[in-house]
Length: 240
Ligand code: CAA
Image (cartoon, rainbow, N blue to C red; front, side, top):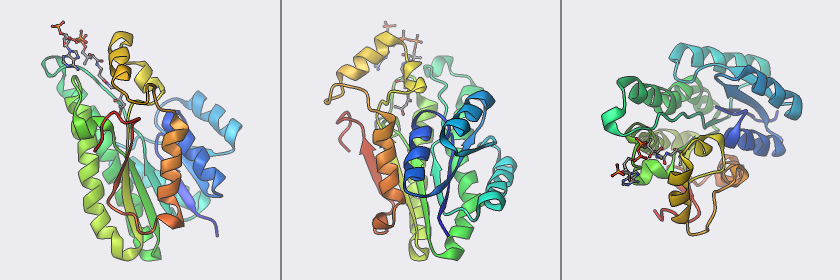
């Protein structure tokens, strides 16, 4: 039987490119999404990939959502924790909600998804978890104490869970994208973004499919010896 993957935030941006890359590998993909029903419907019509709505920051909803995917498509072998939000602002102006929403979704989402799926992967002796971190979790970023903390947390989470999964054939890795041409980056004020792009040695934003290729590799059988690693895909902006 073919493999089944869940890509969180999988119907838009980097997540959409990841869903498509996994589909190309012959994997049955479920794209999770939280908000935009219309965009998710259009995505399913365009790609044939089923979309499932739940908030990855909600523990019970995530357990139920993953169970529904498993009932519909089969046991979940691959999880890509891609769902993420920003609530940028300097600390002076950042509210507790701005902090908490980002921690709950970006980092809490990884925990919730792992709780729902890691046990089954372990029992079946094969699994792949890929967590989308960020250059800003590695290097920090002005105006992002919440996002940088959550993404940095993802890198620690990855290394800890990798140690628990290794002997059961479950690899856990992270990708740390730099600035990618998505709606999230388009929301950065143009003058700020211009300065950021000027610091990227390759001289441009990354493309979603360039992140997806990295994810595809980490999800493949060929990557069985890669675990606990972080693949930095950032155009040379932060060499780590
Ligand atoms: N380093 C030092 N100082 C900085 C700075 C920086 N990187 N950025 C801004 N400042 C300074 C400004 O020069 C300015 O100083 P003065 O008041 O002395 O002129 C001051 O900080 C205020 O700057 P802003 O006018 O930009 O302040 P603001 O409150 O309007 O906005 C902000 C602050 C919301 C953080 C805005 O700067 C911003 O959006 N920055 C971009 C943050 C960012 O990169 N987010 C990434 C989103 S994409 C993503 O997260 C995906 C991923 O994984 C890479």
